[in-house]
Length: 177
Image (cartoon, rainbow, N blue to C red; front, side, top):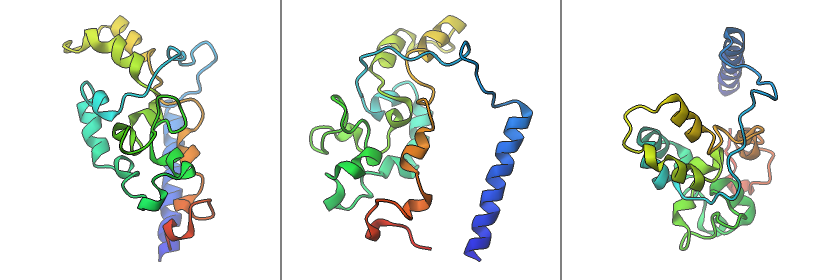
């Protein structure tokens, strides 16, 4: 029963991607249309600062397992660099997650894991905080200050295998069929 369900889910996902591609909703950008790189020198700020403007998205994330990915790690793995690559924001980067005491705002798979550090985005967007609707120019300024999604397939960085099977994840933490 489980293998049949997995097959149906897999086929459904492939079919949905096909519909998206055929409908033209997902297009491959040319080099000229590619998303510009955000400003250099950004620092990690934590999801709560993102919530100041993106509250609805923050609340959706709070209900998701990604927000609890650090808490889900057994204590003995909460300082393991291999685990922290996926279970915290910016681990190994100068302004990234260091440990739960000094950088608790970066524990878990936060906004910045997918979008990159947000300090410049926060700075650039402060003047727009009270705007009910951004002008096209303001929208472009905001959009160009952070990645919509980091280049490459950022999800696959952590989701290399199905549910941690056949991975470097310790056996006791792998999901079972």
